[in-house]
Image (cartoon, rainbow, N blue to C red; front, side, top):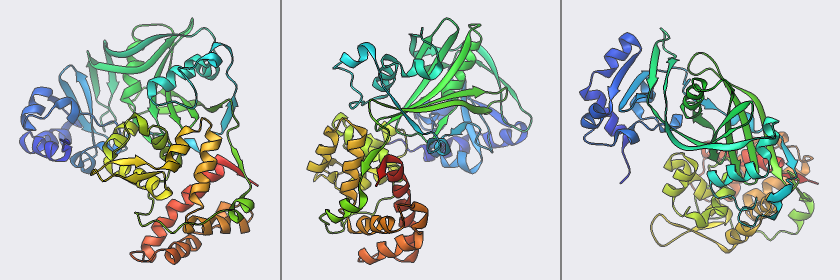
Length: 434
């Protein structure tokens, strides 16, 4: 059964006068026992899990609130009007150009760990360790993995982003690291995500960072790492004195043993393409095509439902449905007769077998231009010298309306055009058009 956080937290705020205390002091403590009782027996750990800004319950969004664990079985709910609890990465991906990296040594002989078959966060971070990507990023050679899994913190202090900058003591809170490493001079802490994470809760790295500051005199290097469709992104963070003060001080993106971009002769591709009928499925509302490819590559790992997709990428079920529908539109997935299930098509199976990012991207492009809307849009791109900026939203909207029989007024067409434009920009960053 899916946990209804909105209803559960509405009950909690109705039964416990949290808002009045928060309005007066900026924060309020809440025990896990009181939370469980007021929510009708719901699991406190699950209710308090809000790892992305979108996963916050409605009452938290409405009142600009956030929640943090402060002790074993105790939380603080506080004012966070500027969403300091979440750091946004989405604007950094496009400006972090991929670099081709050639791994050497023993990793090249491994059959159980291959760059084209990364199916989990742990496999991604283990591979980038064995391939020396991590060593390259931090500029250190003698690095050894020493930390993984759950621990409990010691005692440290944080300063909340409330009007009074309230100081809160943290003690004995459970933390979990995807990986941690030690070198002669540093301790490296890594939080990993599959797919480009637009935001993440800073607690996931800040608590381990503050905890290790009390335990060692070595430099602490917190790294946020994401893997998507052959791209390895590293972001080194710096935490300030106040909770929510976070900067990216170093970032890189790598591809392994292949150029970052594939190559396509656009004009020849358009001339040799057999065009299908426009699919009678929901038009795509998913902006990141790397995630669409990740779903196909990892389908055999159980990504057969929108719930499984949502869990894999750590976003909400609605977003998962958008991405699954995009894969259906392109022809990589189809809906099963079993309710809520998605099945790979023959084209999806072909894409999943490619070990190379470049080949996957090229295959995806050729699938896209078989659709009348995208064939026409890429034809326009061809006539304007491959300059995406010269393909207007109005032109795209007109093409969408031309090929859509019903339910596509001007407003809807313009909204759909924004997704098409994002796909054009993505494709320009994934392949070299000639």
